[in-house]
Image (cartoon, rainbow, N blue to C red; front, top):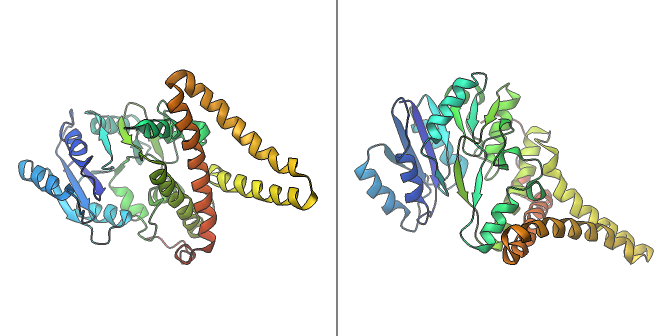
Length: 332
C-alpha cells in the first residue's frame, strides 16, 4: 500500500460524504491507497453513511474509537494502516483531486523533509463562518501561523492535513493520547526536535469548514488555549511565542485596569482596550470594502472571539487538575 489516509470523525453527517468522495476522486497516484475512518461512535447518521460508502468501495475501512478522543483515533488509524505514507486528515474538509499526488511530488522535490502538506483554506457556510474563515487566515486573527496563510510556501511549524513518511512514527512515536487538543501541534514539535522538517505548499489544496456560530468558535479556541498549557508542561519550552500573546495581552489589560482603579486614573485603563479596538476596527474596515458590512461586523466579532477565548482557556489551564496531571516529557 502506498498511502494510508486516516480520518477521525464524530457526528459528521453534514460533511463526511463530501469529504470521502473528494478522496475517492484523487488522481495521478502511482499506487494503491486506503481510507481509514476512525469513528468516535457517532450518534447521528455518520455511521450509516460510512457503511454505505464502504460497501461500494473497498478502499474505505471503518474503525471504532470507543474513547472518543482525537489522538486515540489517530493512533488507532496508524496502527491499522499499511501505507508507505500516512496522511492525517479531517472530516470537516474537502480535498483537491491532486492533493495526495501533489504531496508525493513535494516529497520528491524536497527529500530532506519528513512531512508535507498545504496551507489550510478556511471556508464558511454562513455570514459568521465566512467572517471567521477570514479571521483564521489573517495575521490579525492568528499572528504568524504560516500554515494558515493560503499563499505561503516553505518550511513551517506544522501542516494542518499532513502526509508523513511512515518511518516518522518509529522515530518519534505516536500521538500523545493525554492531549485532548493540540496533539497535532505537539507531534510536529516533537518531530522537529528530532531533526525532522515540515514543508508546505499552496499546490496542496484543501478546504476546511470553520465553526458556524460564535459559541462553537469560542469553545474550539478555549480548548486550544487550555491544552496549550499541557504541551508547555510536557516539554517545558514553548512551540511559538505567538501562543502566549492573547493571554499576556488580556492579563495586562486586567492589571492596568486594576492599577488605574487603585490610582484614580481611569483613563489609564482605557489605553490598551482603545488600541485593541482601533486595530480590530482598522482591519474590519478593509473587510468592509471587500465583503460588505455584514461580514465586516462579524469579522470584528470573530477576531475578538479567537483572541479572548484562547486567552481564557490558556489562563483557565492553571486551575485545571486535568492539565496539571501532564507534567513530564515522556514520549507516548
